[in-house]
Image 1 (cartoon, rainbow, N blue to C red):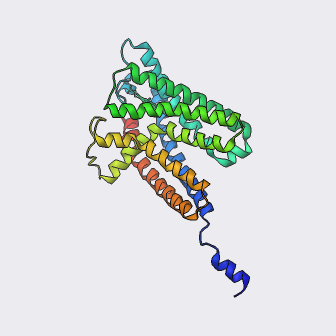
Image 2: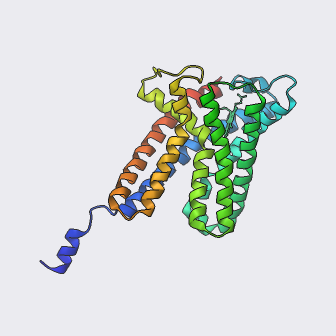
Image 3: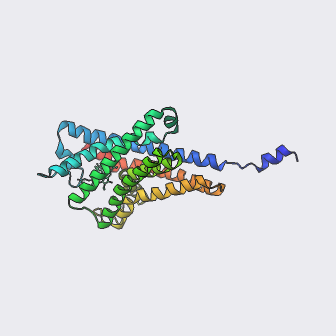
Length: 274
Ligand code: HEM
């Protein structure tokens, strides 16, 4: 046997490192498509209603919305849904390597903008949550509070790592922040997925208080765990771990596409049609 034949035989069919980064890119593209649907919904519903001064229309969509005499709560609610557009639109661009490498100034300014909007949205959302009567179970309150607090914590850690020029750490904290910021989007996708796997029956889901509601509200936590596994697989030399993480990322990408489709039909399209 020649040396070149031996080399050909021992070379693995799939390069685990390439498979992992390909799977990560596939997941990211599906997430960007799903977030585009969410951002279009926010623009078409909240921005159009605001420009038309139709606040009753917005009330029909949420639990509290505008409350007579609650000036602070109403201002926080309106700014929350309007800022939601900017945070969802600006986030994904930060993670496109071609944009990050070729347009560094844009990456820096968009990053500052994304972080500022994230901090404003999360601190405002936490105030809104605790100033007004709670809805859903205490577990839901805990999951939402954890989301708001972690967005702030991950954002500060991403900024600190960037200032210290530790760019690997910066990337990891920014990715964690992106998952936490996407918590509301994951919540909708969670319902879409649950609808799909239970053929619309959705047992255990009632008034945001059932066990299924808490599991669905925790979708972003499962996504965060998935991200940690992906990051671990990137660091480890084991090809097997990389291939398992790649398979999981591809499965997650499929779930994102299916869930986005059902979320659009359950939440976004009916709201726009009403
Ligand atoms: C940072 C990313 C976030 C985005 C993009 C976002 C987006 C939204 C959107 C679009 C709505 C309107 C409901 C809908 O049409 O689906 C909403 C409502 C709401 N959000 Fe957020 N949100 C974020 C973070 C949070 C966090 C961390 C909390 C809690 C700490 C929170 C608390 C709320 C509450 C309480 C409402 C309902 C208001 C009501 O019923 O009156 N949000 N959010």
